[in-house]
Image (cartoon, rainbow, N blue to C red):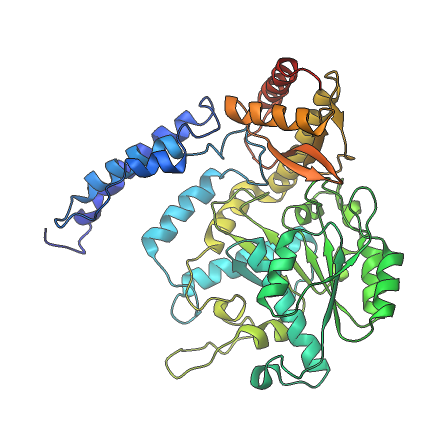
Length: 465
């Protein structure tokens, strides 16, 4: 088959992709949430060896859709609560298709000016919505794990510069030791980021029963180990949704010269809401923040946001200068100076589209609706006999026990096997739990009612013991 760059080479394949995408999206509201096949079963339907001959592009799309369909999780369903995963807003999905069609390698403003300008616009809107410093840099990363890495890398750079250590030339060996402090109930993404950065394990700081770091314990821990330090705070506990006391904890850290980073993978979005913002009071005084757009903002995977209040530290950590890269002399900087990638797709364009579709009031309404759905789920589940809601439902997380660990595990497995709703199991404060994360913009009262009914059925089917 003769390969061609002419538009007709794409037409039939894109038309088939549109048909299959439409069929999938149409099925999501009513299909079981769980996949009907596991990975091993899907693998059996895939050709073992790559054929020698070429295949028509449209046929490839048809084959791909057919083999994938049984193994697809309906994450976009309004009844998916298994992990903190959003759905996809229509404008964001369509924008993501354009991003693939345009195929811009978004590293340099000079080379891809449209992508850079649109991402810069999205960044300015985000800072305004989240009430963060308008002079901060925003990097569009793969997700919150990488966004945490970026924020902590900027902090590492800042602390080394303050200590007079040339990190770029000398590396970490022989340099000042940076100590990291984080709450005992931090997300594992923080530990991963510290591992990537070569900073070692953090010092765990005691937290209260909802997982909030204790400022007095932070102060005591930092006084025991003085010196250059990073403090990681949490906006949205994995199980309770609780927020660290930002104002007090940031003051403790800054009084001791620390860089403060906030892991706000889903919880930072509470800052957009006038009714929820007080739970994050003082968060704007931190030095860096990480969150996801593919969670609460409901843009396609993969898209995280790394926000850093000191652009000079961020760009010193990630900038690269070579003879073949044409840098733009601007205070805005190039996209590749804000993320650990020289090559990436234009992730910020679907963010721009989502924000443009919703507007300020729409973003606020969506965030508040997610929190309201979490409260409704908690209230409905608490009304079922022998169901205990373990957390204060302050945002979008609900943690539930059904008595013994064994019974909780059995009910969780039954729910996942039945597939009408997807809620995942976890362990929190020494107990097995059912963990519910409300992240999808399509979840409505009917989804909440159906999900409560599914849990009630699973509870009635599993005897106590």
